[in-house]
Each structure stands twice: as structure tokens, then as C-alpha cells.
Amino acid sequence: MLDFNIVDIFSAFMVLFAVIDITGSIPIIIDLRNKHGQIEANKATLVATITLFAFLLGGESILNIFGVDIPSFAIAGSFILLFLALEMILGIELFKSDEDAKSGASIVPLAFPLIAGAGSITSLLSLKAEYSTLNISIALILNMIIVFVVLKNTVRVEKLIGQTGIMILRKVFGIILLAIAIKLFVANTGISLTHHA
Image (tube, rainbow, N blue to C red; front, side, top):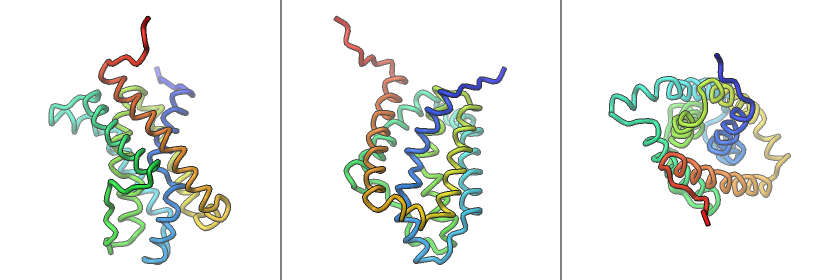
């Protein structure tokens, strides 16, 4: 029986949307286009999708080789999400990206690591501790559709949202991501935040 659940899909979708943060990456994408020429939305989206699905479907087997289970990885992932959230909220840079890549900006650094980076890969594996692969897959596909649309319409989206709008989006999703990081940590450590009288 397929474990199809709209609520789970929406929850996983919001996590991935916040982590991938394609709208918050619009200024970076515009900068890449100016430096390297035209951004190939088709190629970038395809490479990112294949990379993320490879980790979603095969990541658990890779972890088993190293003797690591999903809950343990989820706890590690919660720290990654915490740092990503702090980046977005405080406007600091904790994760350094390879800006000197010359082999086509559509693949590096756009598809990887900007879209399919450490945060999104970690999030996928962490989500498997709570949601079914089917629901995560649907959430991932929906996110990749948004990524493709944004990449194809970067300039229009920037004009529509504006620099202030993009900044607000980053702060809001940063707070959401911070809450998700705490939830992941608590859910996989067995710690209860509920106060009992």
C-alpha cells in the first residue's frame, strides 16, 4: 500500500523549499549569469534532481556501509539545518561555495552545491526518518518544478519580489528552518520539550 499523505507532502515540501531557498538564491543566480553567461535552467534542474534522487533512494545504503542509521544522520542533519538557518537569519556565511568553478555555472556551482548541496541532501535523508519515500519524492519533484520556473524567470522574479522581498523571504524561511532543525533533533534524540506539571 502506497503511503500517500497530503500533509506529509506539504511538510516535506516546506522543508525542502526552505533549504533549497531558490528565491533567496536569485541574487547569486544573477551574479553567476553575469560572470559566466547564460544559465541553462534545463541542465541545472536535471543535474540537481538526479543528484538529490540518488541520495534519497541510495543514501540509506551508503550510510549502512559506514554503520550509521537514519536517526543518527538526522541528528547530524539537524545541526546542518541549524547553521543554514543562522546564515539566513543573521546574514552571515558559514558554508563556503566554490565561486572559482570555470566548468559551466549551470552545473557548478548552480546545480551543485547551490541547489543540490549539503543542506538539501542532508534534509532528504533526515526527512526519511519521519516521512515515506513516496511523499518525499513528490515534495522533491514539486520543488524542482519551482526551481526550474525560477531559473527560467530569474529577472522577472527579482523585479516582482524586489530586493527587500527577497531579504524578508530569507529571514522568514530561516526562522522556519531553525524550528525544523530543533524538531528534527528532538524527534531523533527522544528529548521532550513538553513541560509536565
